[in-house]
Length: 137
Image (cartoon, rainbow, N blue to C red; front, side, top):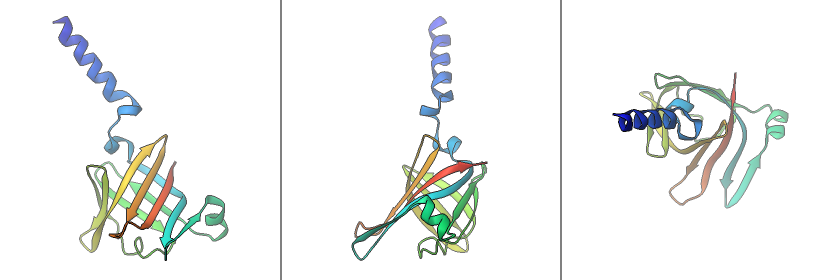
């Protein structure tokens, strides 16, 4: 009986720590793009936070716990522009964003130290988008 109680306490502790928190528990909230990379014609382009501010470029995404998302922004990338507000879901290490009115876009993702990273590569392996977001209030 004591072993079962100890085991259940261990499982509870593992689920409660951020290191082992499920992405579905970490993702809900508001996220703001602060840096991104794109690859065009074999050249990797990097826009950092200061450059985004100077050019008045932004992309904000709000993920709700009910798997809905809303996004606003003006970074003008062909990959992001057609994404309509809708549903988000996980499949392995991929985050899918889409709605009935738009195609679904799949990003590889990671959440580390309150930072969301989204990566999308084309079929040739070139980076279509690699963005870094921080959580905002």
